[in-house]
Length: 450
Image (tube, rainbow, N blue to C red):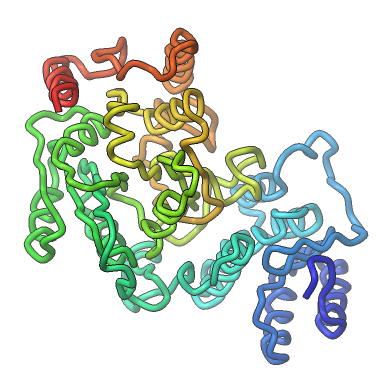
């Protein structure tokens, strides 16, 4: 297949489905499923998704004359998925499907499948079909096989997120030799999700891992669960903190115990695709220039039910309005982190993005961003990004995040003529909760003397 054409018999099937759907756009997912079944019967294995504006097959986008145009001229700069998802939140699922089918363009076409998955949420095998079809599109666009990114579901009564697994079950470690990667997992009252998050790390295709679980004074059973996990896997360490300081102090303390040549982080309520570490290591290990030091991946957001969330306007953080830049995902060369970055800023929220922008501002050649999903993040009401006082997206930016973003930009600007920033200074005005300044300064001193 060329970049602009499909076999005639495949084009004919798509055209027939498109005629049907143009007449009944609210039934787009039904017609998409029927087309998938016909193509499978013909032996066609590449994912195909069509909308009113064109067709995408894997990574190739084939524009067509559209019968429809955007219903709101002022909305042309927004992702059709973003607007459709907001309509679905009112309960109008069929209207959301209709809007997205009519107006999705280019990369958005593949992401239609996530909207279809949400609309088919009550039918588990259909939800799985459309979720995996979307992931197959993303993998094809990145030149990857789809199998490592396919999802499966175990039987049982747990939520869909809790039952989600890599389609082949636990990944067989394909890479047993190579540099050690330390994964820092800050924990605070994560008893409901910690084992799920850790299991996704234990199932990585990159076997040379150490997993450091840093308990930030949880009041639930998180610490006991962490110890049980460590008992069963020698790669896991448990580090209980004596005072609650937030996730970035926890990461800084965990870093002092990490032995890996590379280091990354993973939140205690997120699920990693089995190739997450291998995918993020590959460009750093294969870089002939010797400049790459940090890799960042992409993420999807999901509620416990399996509903995909946080669709957003398309911009530099998301090409299709669904798969989005993942601030908690950076994988760093450890020596680069120690000597150039120093530490995470010890604020309560937002420091993941600050440290990435620190690299982008002062050493952009050191950073690569992968257009691949490395994790699925659980979207729950009690998370910092949905708390009305600290929210980071979906409902806009909370004032505390805006204040911090302005503060770090000012900090970067004041040192713009230097080859790199000085290590983060602590305490900062709103960096550390009252009573923890001594603890934060102790971490800073330890890092400086390491």
